Length: 157
View (cartoon, rainbow, N blue to C red):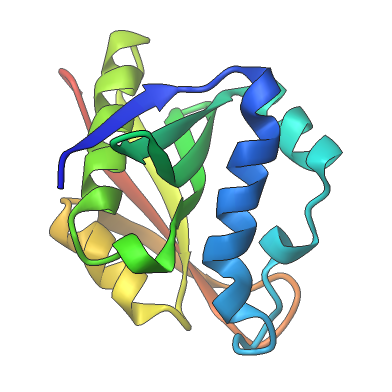
């Protein structure tokens, strides 16, 4: 499967939201603290995209993944990486993160930052395998889970 990744435009916010909701649907009622992704409105997604941007990944003409990003003090923060269930474990998330790392470097950022739930150990393992280092592990602000803050230097950091 050939996967292509590209930046989105604001008019694609409904597609970004649709992919995110489809990918995060399995977590409804399954996590110690409910994911905020399942409650985000289209206006929330548009606001997040205006604060930074978003990408879409495609297999042919089919959109299969999305992620959002925004600049932060120490680099580019990436969140809401969402791969449709039928396309997981095929390197799609790695391809999206590689695209975002190249984008961040082209924008002059020294690192990518992410946050991952302790209750999703497969996601923690994915980011570790991609070279992300753990900065800290904090209690989740809304309840009984922990949040791994991770960072990967890029470019000439």
